Length: 491
Image (tube, rainbow, N blue to C red):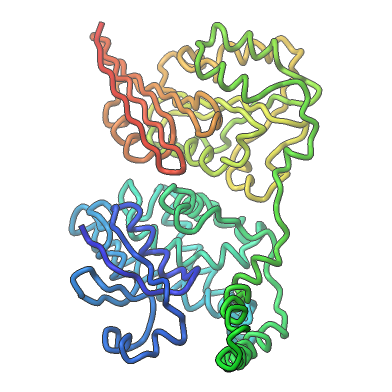
């Protein structure tokens, strides 16, 4: 297995490619702790290994030196990330070029002046905006029928393009600007919210408002290098002040960090609402551990209609649904992107029907009486693809709907020929549970196993005339604990 030392500065999106690929493959990478950008990379020793002095740069455990982030990421990746065949590997290289040629120049020309890294030129920025729109439009079209850029699992193509888009989503693509690119938004958040990505970049926050240009930032950035040199000279003269001087670079924020620090801290909108008497976590535990005959009456026994509401969500574009596994990806992806809602929400959704003839609908319960998705920009990626109807808890039709349809993971009755994908409980403690029923469709099961990630899955396969059940549970917590239990029996 590959291993070595990575030279980079903090929060380098190019280095993120390498570190995320290493998370997937298990490659042991040590980040050079004594590296100081602008100093270390100008030393004779560094230039002897890496003549251009650019980072990220990687030195293998046996002394080989590699530059360019895509090349380093490829070196530390595993077979799945690199592509399983020649065509996939070729397509991955194609997306490397797309990211570096179509996205990166425009992203830098738009974002860097706002961070004070380079001078602001209005004409250049406007051209950059148009180039970003063209790139996102092309990417949005490609992802219309795909979960990932290449194949059915994450590859280096997804990692490279997503990290190149990072600054755009972080600083300028506010909700209105990213709204036309729903496919890209869905895919981007799927990639960055993988456990392997979170381990490297942390909990990523989408831009709520486009960063505004401030002429002072560029002047301040240019003055930082001069201040730093003066402080280093003073530290040599006075030994008592040397420790303080050494601590100052850590306290002095770069433009990117300063922009992040200036952003207001976000809170969960549910925290501001009355809690009521309905203990949602208690119900989720009960629902996950008991069958519907007990959990549904328990729900009505505990439900607080004054502080919680029940909603029916129905997918608007059922005529566009094709393969069952792709439709299931829509549900799992939505749950994945709504992870922050789990403290105040519960949901159970179904995929009804077969390939090219299916529909998606679900029952949602959350804190408050209004549509919850409008409370937070991070929750608005998928909700407009559904029509939402508020249900009256006292109405007998609501109780009948919950009894017969999505709440019941094993006996939905909407159609006689049924293939269900039922998330059994929306983000209970602390992950998401899913229950899927796949009838006469073993390839669909295989596809789901490849594409659905960090969820709690159980699948039931019914194969006439013999009833064969495979119960597979996969529990993946976001912080990399993995348990797999497989039981197989026939009757």
